[in-house]
Length: 246
Image 1 (cartoon, rainbow, N blue to C red):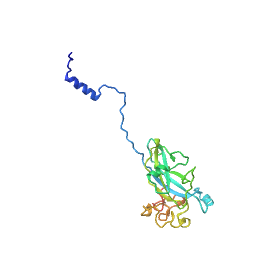
Image 2 (tube, rainbow, N blue to C red):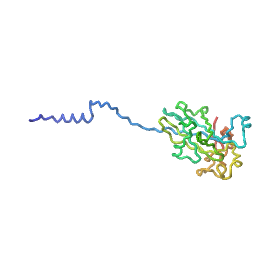
Image 3 (cartoon, rainbow, N blue to C red):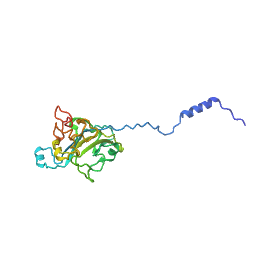
């Protein structure tokens, strides 16, 4: 039996339709290209050691002052992340200059829940009236509580956190000395050659006073009130104070 031969044009049409799947509904959506954009990197504005008894009321502070106050820290920053999934910042506190692994593993969580400082995108602002101020009372928060130790230099970094656990790269580390008194007391409170009381900066990367930890012998608070944050007075700038603020 002979089968009727098919015209060559038929083969061309079949091949063409097969290639482009013309008229075929697969009910399968086309997968879009997904680009993972890392969250913006936040920055700390200032980190300053203060007396654990300080209330910002001069008369009260004089009455509460003791010869051996426990150091705590006042941390200041702006909310700058505007990503829709932004949920806040994670804080990291180390006694060594923090690397990537250290900051990932050492979140400072006061209540044990991330992020350290909850925020939402609508809070983003760099207005002087929107500076965020946090008081950090422990080097390690409860339940494994550890107090800050005098004369020790601590390093602070923050990372932005998005829903799903995605975090930004760490901010530039801010290092400062755990001395809650004015810096002139460094020589009387710290042993020579230990921590803050050194003739040179503790950080080997320091080559100029402005790059050294605030509160160290080579970068003291000389232009502001160290107990209240060492804010630069009008017309002044670091070193010798933290930043020009309200």
